[in-house]
Image (cartoon, rainbow, N blue to C red; front, side, top):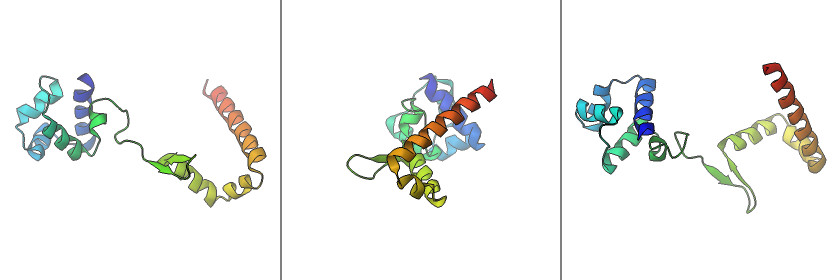
Length: 130
């Protein structure tokens, strides 16, 4: 479980905790917690749950099943459409700029135009990055 120990260390360091601090919060000895970070021991399910809660991440993230600290949240808009947080945020920003209304005036044509513009921008940025 190399991913587990690496994520434990990364989360602890990122948040500025010492092993002693985390161990105390989890009601563990410092050496017991240290063994998790060294990969010498694996926590019980109850302890794994406490660790995830302490660091405010999902257990799936700790175990390396997903690469984001939390599972993405999806919002059903209709039977055919579901949006995640970032998509919903992009739509909100487009609405604030009145871009959504403008695109919606002729949605098929305007979304095709918008897509061509986006492809052009990505191509130009790729050239600039080289």
